[in-house]
Length: 219
Image 1 (cartoon, one colour):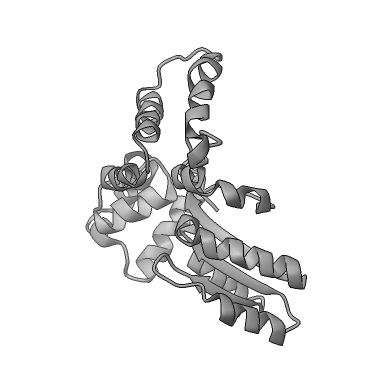
Image 2 (spheres, one colour):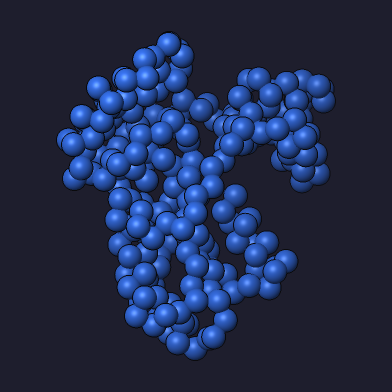
């Protein structure tokens, strides 16, 4: 999605945009040269911000020193942002969450997938069954719907990889606790967070686990 936003910004709005994928490299010297050679705003889109945190912080120092018109748009899952990106938090000007798909968005997504021959196994289902798959089976979440519906990748595999990427045993245990509460939906007292989760935050200070939220993706 971030790549598409960058493409639209460049093509539809004629902006100077750069996209950095997870495997990409932010070349500080080249960006510093670009900044010095142009007087137009620069938009840098960075996927998986935790992978590029050090370089992003270097860019912020250059931007501050040169007063350059540079906007950095990052995407990251909440668990990795909370665990690894605490130093980026002071620079965040706005947050956008990938929410559940609405009815019209489900229909629009299916139309686009069909237009570009990207329905995956959904192509073998009647139209009403396709809609049902996105509405109920995949819980309307865009990332879940696209991965599971078009490629047949179980969402549990995504969660497993995310879980394995958490850098401490304590944070992994907290991740499991939150997943269990979300999965089974038991009634929970309002004071649970203060009694159980907040004290645990002190143990995670070195990891930058500053907010505990059940949402999946952060941009």
